[in-house]
Length: 547
RNA sequence: GCGCGAGUAGCUCAGCUGGAUAGAGCGUCGGCCUCCGGAGCCGAAGGUCGUGGGUUCGAAUCCCGCCUCGCGCACCA
Image 1 (cartoon, rainbow, N blue to C red):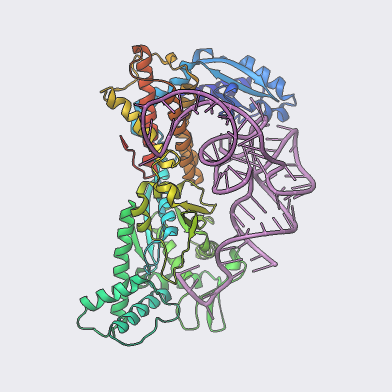
Image 2 (image 1 turned 60 degrees about the vertical axis):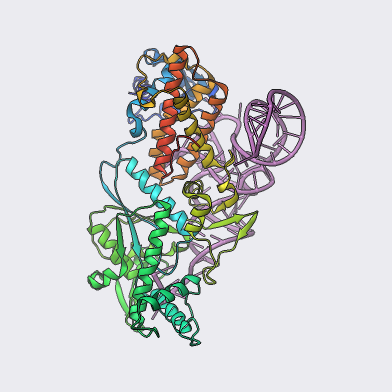
């Protein structure tokens, strides 16, 4: 039992003695000001109304009923409008370090997920071009969210959905076909809505080489399949460079070949929320909160994109994912209501909030103080691989994760590639490297640090007490970030913790101190190394031993 | 016009799901350390949290109106 849990239990008992109504759920938080102790609760403030007493009186009464000396609470004080502050002894605060080294790489994990299955879909780029910076943000975000869920006990499956059917794919094939014709000396323009990038020309060149039987590019089907295959290969290389792996690649085309789309349409019609108008088939999505109804089947007999989308999500449900999370760019937010409406119209017992969406805003790239213009149509844009090649995988991933998805992200290439302490990823990794350096220089195996026999009250310096608090907060932070699906909290936490680690390292020495002090500080160094490493690992970042 | 998101220090952004005197980095200013260096340390200034109401013991956080910016508003995905 942690000190925090013990305080909580004591508060519940004390509140009960005062006649507080059940359930009693005291909130314990870290006071902003270290002078307010290690923990504080607003319990008295929340009990003021039901008990019809002044908060400060309740706080004093609670404090009198608390018996916490044996768990290391040095003293308790009532402050402000009725907060109760708990001041721990140095050793009580540091006791948690023993858990850190005991749990090692597992410190920070928890089990709220209880092994339930969750599907995390992200990137899902159309195979019509290389992955650009927006996909990069999504790859980093999706992978980190998946990782957060794993850390909190979920059975996670990472999924990539390929839109390899539809108009855009047709445009891709025609674009390549036009380039083949141009190679053949004919003046054929890129069709309207087509793709102009240099990579299209390269695919055309490869097609001609690998398909000697079709030098004029007559077979559009074969060309299209070839182009999709080539681009998928390219995207795989992009993802590989980024260190992201998927468990499942789901092809939209399979929904057609397996009859899932027709099946879904029949089920939607049977569900009674469809109607015919103007030679088209409509779904009454307004029954489920949409602002207007949507066409399912167009006049030309083909389906609109959201029909296969619904069919796709039915397969997720049928594959046993009672929870599904989609990470997408905010420019796709109009699909949210439609997909959910489609699923509701099927009457399959799928919850109304299924699937969950994490939408992220746009990315702009800055280099030399100027914005790098991105234009997909003109074929000039920064790809994920360009970025990884230029600044390294860790910097790219961290920069994409350090802002919350809701805010637009400015990617400063110059900062990302700099090896200075202004660069947050460098600064964090340096903290880890420094801790590792202590063990290297001292010729001590960090894994041998168990904390056994360490005199914890030796860790009495303010920098040590602050660092310890931060380290012990890691599991709660991971749990909160996972619940909110917000990896940026981990990124920010690592930066804050690294700062505390550097401050401690600058001011105090570990090696060559008297044994009592050295052993205690080795424990702290080991715990710091582990927590920073665990956080980096969680975000898909490396934790170098030296830099 | 409608929907979603954002608006917090000069700049880039946090703010732990409603708590105490709103924080960090960079930048600015002042001081210190330094054999070497793409260095380091300490301190200070800097805020009507876009704005006007509301909810309550208490609001940057929740609700409503308005303003500004971004993204969407196709029988494209």
